[in-house]
Amino acid sequence: MKKKFLGVALSVAMVASLLAGCGSSSDDSAATEAPATDATEAPAADGADATDAPAADEGNAASGDLIKVGIINNDPNESGYRTANVEDLKAKFTEANGYQASFAYSLKNEEQIASAQKMIQDGVDYLLLSAADTSGWDGVLKDAKDNGTKVILFDRTIDADESLYEASIVSDMNKEGETAVNWLADQKLDEYKIIHIQGVMGSAAQKGRSKALDDKVAAESTWSIVAQQTAEWNADKAQQIVQSVIDSKEKFNVIYAENDDMAKGAVAALDKANISHGVGKDVIVMGYDCNKWALEELLNQNWNYDGQCNPFQAQYIDEVIKKLEAGETIEEKTIVMDEKGFDATTITQDDVDTYGI
Image 1 (cartoon, one colour):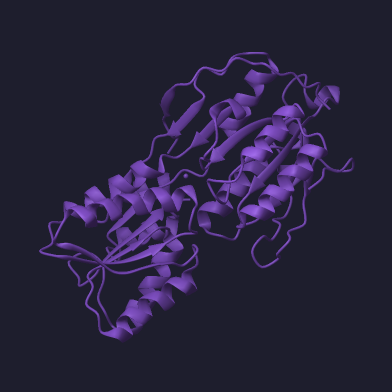
Image 2 (cartoon, rainbow, N blue to C red):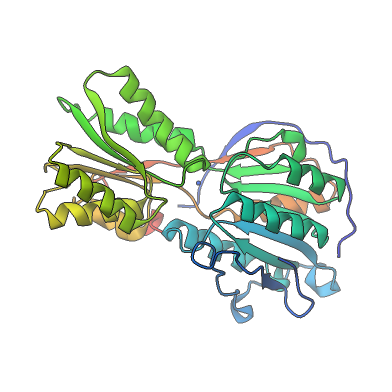
């Protein structure tokens, strides 16, 4: 195990980094997984195939001095975004790349906290955290600091003092929401009657994507929410929400879904009721995450908008760890990844191929 060191001075800055295109460990394997408390909500993904692992970094795995990391993430089956995020991390944090990694997954904050505390007790050098909820992490982060475990946030922010973590590699969820809502305002509808399908309540993604819409509705007399309910990133739950509105005979002309899977479920309800959707149709459909299949729906003009959320954070994390291991200062503590939104009327096949996950 790497010898721990503390007291690295970190300065706070914001930087936009351009995209290229938001348990215990085992002695027998460099990639182990903590068992999920609730198998339906926190299934463990398969480990990375060692034959596909990238070449080892010089002086790391070759010396047998592996860096021990514990990775706390959301359910890999939560969405296409999360699946891509999990696989990206598994491909990077391998023995061949100089790491001994353990993984734990849950959509429940209390289960994530329990797994994080176990990893700290097991002596991980780094705790990598994508929190299910923004609050409740102060105790864990303080325990980590006391035990010499460095914390790096990825994908999602938390409500904690910056002195308690080394770096935060995130999407700007508020900006994602603002970009989407500004696009919707530019459609210049006479009135906006919106079904708002939210993600897991309390998550950074839900808060950022909801806030922009809530603010706009509060400010504009022609904007109203017909239904606002969480589907917890799930397509079937989103379909039920939209079906309930259809059954109530309430009029609506916008589906604002906070991820692609929920948008897909909403569209299934529209199709079942023979309600047209997409460019020039009765209902505007909006999603997030830029799954390739979702961008293809835009290309075919069945959907109207999709907001990008970059799942590929492993390289950023790896670079931060290498700097810390070398005793360097992390000058850009908060790394915000540059993201965009896609419009069905302007998206190209090249966009689908480049940005689809």
